[in-house]
Length: 274
Image 1 (cartoon, rainbow, N blue to C red):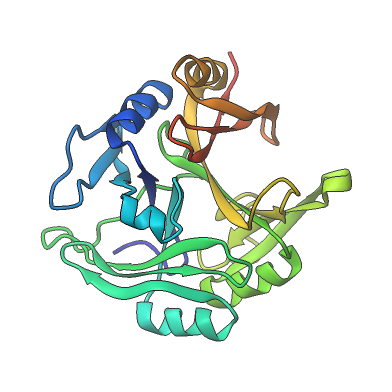
Image 2 (image 1 turned 45 degrees about the vertical axis):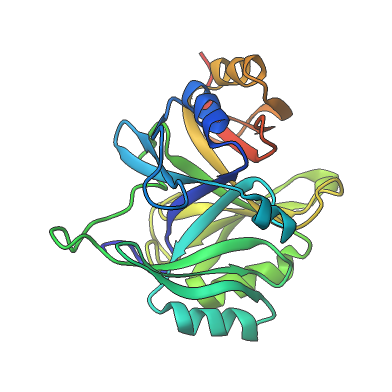
């Protein structure tokens, strides 16, 4: 694969109502989502105009009994899943599932950082006819509607989270923004894609911030791009979702918001205002 170790390369929605989630996100974000999944677990592909960007899978009663909840998870590309899983565990994190091999997809594991924020690690298997295939699911440097534009970690301990991720994925602090009583918003850059001296903003992947008191646990939030943030907000409320954080202006002139879909998954959007 042409992606680097430490790239976000895929996103996944786990939901108790795949058909309801499909109707909601197709209307709000403009995605095309498969009406039915392939295989025994009803896994459905989510696509933008540029191609697949994410997946959707059912949250089964058995998963709920085990503590799983509706939500979005990100996948980080790694060179060696088994070695990275050991490193995460040795660093105070947890290996929640795996590693295991998924035919046609790659080797993966579900892990969590030392403060409980879950994510997947994946060494992808490229298509036989395209060994240099590149994931564009995350697209910061070239904004694309329907693609993830920002990866944000809300952590119990940002000062400890930064070195944990830096040592394993090559992410480094790029800059910071003072949020007053909420603390610092610290921007993350992928050093492998943008070494010191790169143009401003190059290689940006997201940020780390203190977890808000009302959040139950440390977690990643993924911001997907929409053409018009106000149109998307209206669609959210018209289709059974709720707004947690109304649109706020962010550096660069876009607006971001956070919501909850009708099935209970927190999600986030970013876009311009007409």
